[in-house]
Every structure is written in C-alpha cells, then in structure tokens.
Image (cartoon, rainbow, N blue to C red):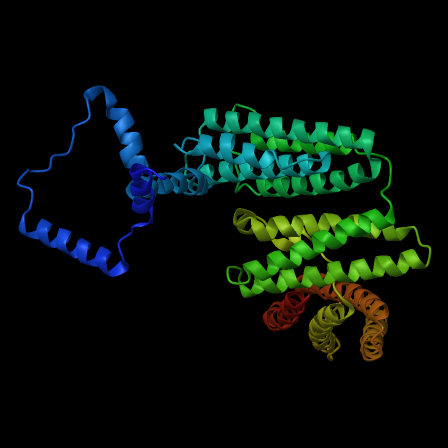
Length: 446
C-alpha cells in the first residue's frame, strides 16, 4: 500500500497550469502592480572612493561610449598621427614620430639585403628633400644642416654595408643594387649642384659634400661582376612597369610639357628593352650593357616623377638625356636647313654687292664664287638626303654646309673691315652700310 505522502508528491509533479491559466495569472499580477506601486524611491549605490578606477573600467570602458572613445583614440594614434608626421621636417613636433616610428616600422619589412639597400636609399632622398624644404623656407641653420648631413652619411654607410653583404652573398643582385643606388645619388647630386638645394656656403660639412663623397665611394667599391641578362631583364621590366604606373598617377599634377618629356623617355625605355632582347638573341654582349643603362634611366625617371622638388630644380633633359628618334632628328635637321638657306641668301646678296662695278674688295672673287657654288650643291644634297630619309647623310651634309657657310660669312666680315679703310670718304658710308647689313643678317641667321 502506497503512502499518502508519496501519492501527493507524485500528483504535484504532474499538476501544471494551462497556457490560458498562466496568461490570466500574469495579467492579474501586472494589473495589481500598476494599481499598487511600491512607494520607495530607487537610489543608485555610490561606489566607494577607493573603487573609482574599477568603476570607470567596468562602467565606462565596457559601455558603448567607452568603446567609441577607445576606437577614436586608436584611429588618432595609429592612423592620423603617423600620416600627419609624414609631412614633418626637423624641428617639428611630429618629426620623431616620422623617423623613430614610421620609418622604424617600415624598416621591419625590409627583409632582404637588396630591400635594405633600397630602403636606405629612400631615406637619403627623404632627408635631402627635408633639407631643401627648410632651405626654401629660410630655416636651414648650420646646426640643422650638420644634423641632416650626419643622418645622410649614416644612411649612405648603411646602404654601403648592405651592398657589401650582397656582394658576398649574391654578386648578381649586388650589381643591380649598385645601379639603383648610384642612380639615386646622381639625381641628388644634380639637384644640389643647381644651387636650389642646401649649399649655402656654411662652415660645417654640407649635405652636398656628403652626397658627393657617398657617390665617389659607391663608384670606387662597385663590383666588377656583370649581372646575367635574364636577372637584369626581370628587374628592368619590373621597374619599367612601376615607372608607367607612376606616370599614370601624376598626369593630373604634371604639366603637358612634362608629360610629353616623360612619355618620350618611357617610350625610349620600352624601345631599349626590346632592342636588348633582340641583341641578346643575336648573341651580342651589348645587350646587358643596354639593360644596365636602361635601369639607371628608369630609376632617375621615377625619382623625377615622385619628387616634386626634383622637378622644380632639375630639367628632365639634364637628368635623363635621351637620344632623339629618326623622326625627331629629321625635324631638327629641317630647322637647321631652313636657317642655312637663309644664310645662303644673305651670303649671295653680299657677294653680289662686292662684285658690282667699281666695288673695292680684298676677297678672292673666283675662290669665293667656287665656295658659294659648293654651298649651293651641299644644300641640294641635303634636300636629297632628307627626301630619301637618310638621317645620317642628312645631318653630315648639314654640318659640312654650315661650316662652309660660316667661313664665307667670316670672309665677308673681314673684307668689310679692310675695305672700309681703302674706299674714298664720300663712298664709305654707302659701301659700309650695304656690307654691314649683309653681314649682320648672315651672322644673325647662323
């Protein structure tokens, strides 16, 4: 026989309110609470003074507002400040952030010796750019220049150490790095030599002297090994692609003339690369030399495009001279030919003047006439070479014709001086004026 207590417990476990009963009970309780509120004012407990920091950590940092503040501070510290520091120069409050934080972080990504040399080269360019900016603003004191010069020397020494490490481990890559490093130093030397840089006649060792010394050291320690054509070609094509990307990026900032000059050199670079490939396929040893020269051109062109101070200080023609194409040579030759024909007319007018009846002259008429006929024949030959698009013959013919024309002009000038003393006084004014007019016209044209 089961006990009553056991049966009661079993029954209570099975007994539950229905859904309708639970809803009615909840409504009654809520209704009672609304009509019979608790008459006690709720108070917030005050944290003890000793728990202030714990209170702030739990209640503020853990709140939405705290997370927003923390996010803003993180953006400010890790993004805004480093970006703003990139525009700083020695003496600015954020300059230490630029040199000790930004550049230190970037240095960690230079894993190979080649990348370290490239990074130190970039730091040299940055320090010199800062010095030029300070010089333009009149803020480059002796102390600041000495500090920058010492920093540049440190970066140059670090680059030389990287090159020495490369020479020991990878002679081919070292040769390529030497071309890049040397090209960068050539650009900076050219900028500082223009007088737009930091040379202010200071007593301390100037940045220009430091850069020139680094350039001489780089030349004296250059490796004698020649990089392979394949390895050099890979590097040249990569740098050429970078140059094309930079050109697209600066088209909005560069002038039309600068864009034309840059595009001309990019075309020359592409032509050199293809020409080197053909030469290498033919077994020519000049292919590697062509690529080495082209790599130097690319590095200088990239610096010109990416550094506005360089563009303001040095012309691209002085920095990266490029051989004119056949079409450009013909156009320049046509300009020379037009001037030469103008000189020819002036010489003939002068010759007609001195051969008039009664004219006093010291010139050998027969010899002068023969030279003038030779000049006429040379000009005809120049036109023939131009029509045949024989560029070399066209230019050589022009050079010989210009030399002959110059001699005839000088003969007329000498004759003018000598005959002025021999002609009668009443005829001197007319004769001198006629001859002088011809000589001036001819010399101006030349």
